[in-house]
Length: 64
Image: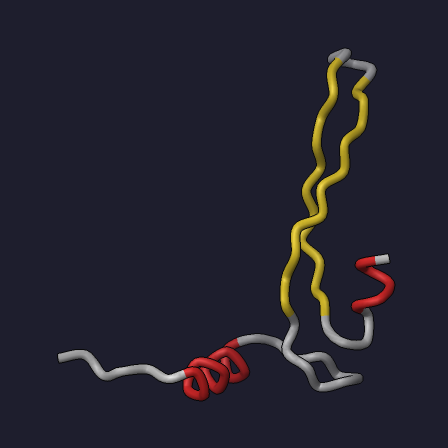
């Protein structure tokens, strides 16, 4: 049988694996930002996707 995993062990695992912010010490969460632009060469709309790291210290700038 598999070992049951609780929420505390999930948090500990994510803190070990992922990067943490040097200023606030919080673990980064990643969001995708999508930007639409018009391409003159193909005469169509295109989308640019960008992955952004978010933590407590830059949360207001990203979501504003």
